[in-house]
Image (cartoon, rainbow, N blue to C red; front, side, top):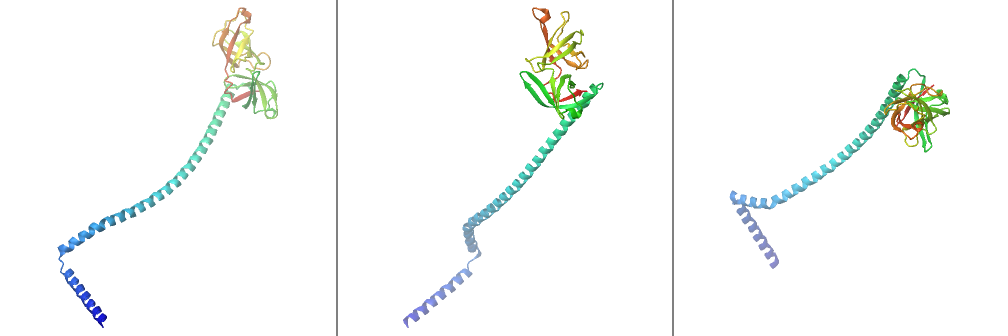
Length: 270
């Protein structure tokens, strides 16, 4: 009985307190309410700002990863385009080289129009201490025979010494075993030019007449004697005159008209 009375009293007290609070809050003026709101805002706003910053940060990271994927895709596309451009450039260089070769052949054929010629490329060089032999990509199938003269746009190269169906070997004039009957263009004196081991683009002129007046820079041409080389093909120019005690032993160094280190295209005279 006592417990029931106690519980009832507590319920009445709680009810009265709630009613009092309702009355108090109902009569709070606007100024007091603004103060409470301000206090609440002071506490809540930093939290809201932090949450907003975190949200934006996450959104920004998502954009960053999206941009990274886009950049990777663009990079792959650029790599592919670069590969295609490099391939196109190689093809263009090949076309340019072929055109240059055709122009060189055309110029040589115009230069030596009085001869019937066969065009060829140097495909190998057999160079040793005692040999200067080049291999050409033209043979019997193209009409090449032994002892045919070989020339370039610059001048005399040598003559054919062996032939297969598709290739031929040319003994160049710089080969130590080579010998070319020549003429000094100014004096018309006859000399013999032989390959010289001391230089890749020079010859040694011997059998010089004792009364011949040699000058540096004089042109040396084929004499037409010997049955291999036609007359008047440029061999080179006198680079140096070597006088000896015996004038009959003097000789001259001839710089060849052809740069054999860079020789690529030739004509074979039929």
